[in-house]
Length: 277
Length: 267
Ligand SMILES: Nc1ncnc2c1ncn2[C@@H]1O[C@H](COP(=O)(O)OP(=O)(O)O)[C@@H](O)[C@H]1O
Ligand SMILES: [Mg+2]
Image 1: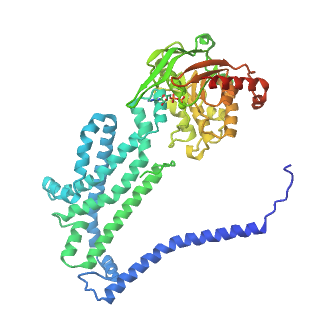
Image 2: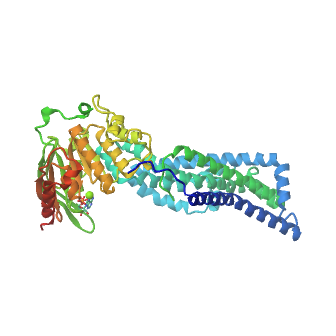
Image 3: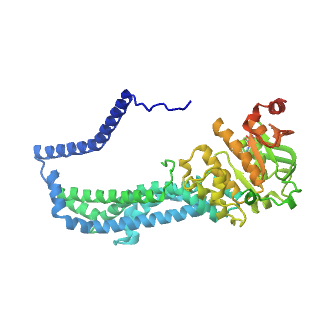
């Protein structure tokens, strides 16, 4: 049956394929171009409003003045970014490490989870803005309360996700470990920990941006350096260009932090993980 | 390779692989009490291929889990390879294959097969087959480094079978391992399972709700009834040891299948 049938390409089919590829290319170009068009439009509207309505510079700056400030005062902005970055990263590490450890304890000691988890939920409902002054009173005016706030803000989502990740193990995989007479320790390292990684990273990505928010909020109270302090300073001085430039620097750091975590996730979670919310 | 894979010593083969005496399992939950198994008795010789056949909910999985020491019977006594089920489990005498393969998604095929050697004090037997050899045995040579999501459902079950064999079990427990596969893949894996069974000389307890699968694979079929889960009849399958797929069209096969259907249907 399967003898030489000459390979024939139906010209209509070739044309259809080409049309499909052209359409796909167009779609890709559009997806890349459209966000730029959107951003450009917003910038134009912003500039038009500031110039057109002659908004005074102590209320809102023009985009050009913001860029100018970013360029002229770059050194000063970076000097202020450094403490914020240190606080955010330290808080991120502290909060997440503690969350991972407590999640591990909870999974192995259900009684502790039952006793303390409601308390943790309760503490989490206190808004950051209320926690900040409490921590400043407790820890003083230095870098410690800022780290503590950043850590607290990271802690909760990671704890919840980590407990979920450690516990939501495929029940048949659990039975398999039982048939293999695996110890609790082996079940933890070979099964639970690996299983939790996608859950952990989805929390870490949230934590990367909230840690920065925590550090900035911490700097609003009783300090003179850092992105948070600079924002307050610029506001009180009606230096709107500096205010905007500082906000942009903070946002850029947040985004960079997020991308570093995403990059680490790509390296660590190499398998096809089910989507985690 | 057949010699390397044989893990049964002839000295002990007189001892039954599994002996159940009046096994009962009762699950008590908030809503109800279920008699999952009631007065189950049978003896399984070493090296045999037994299928558990019955409608869903009749306690097939529960019986398999009793043998694997995953569920403790509330009545009766079970001995596995002359000792308790727990002793057999601790001695790594049992291999279990689950319906949904239960591979660890972060491990490649070869790493999944190696798992039993890494936990529970498992170590490769000097004379036992290596994970590579087992993957070759189940027809997955060349796919060692594929992750489970890169494999088809049939391939994943093959990996699960290789994993169950790696610790050199003397009893292989399989809970509807091909239940989720399409018929063509299932046929192929049935043929391969018979070949593997012959090469490894393991005892197999195979759960299925397919009359044809049970007839094709088994030496004996334990037909179960539901509510409570009990033994209806233990039917010997008098078919030649060599079973090409075409045997399913033979008169003998059709007769046995019809008999099994009759036993299942008799209420
Ligand atoms: N862990 C359990 N708790 C409560 N009831 C169970 C449990 N496991 C099984 N059962 C019940 O026992 C009966 C037999 O279940 P099972 O052995 O899974 O049947 P099968 O594998 O033949 O479909 C069913 O009615 C099921 O609902
Ligand atoms: Mg079942």
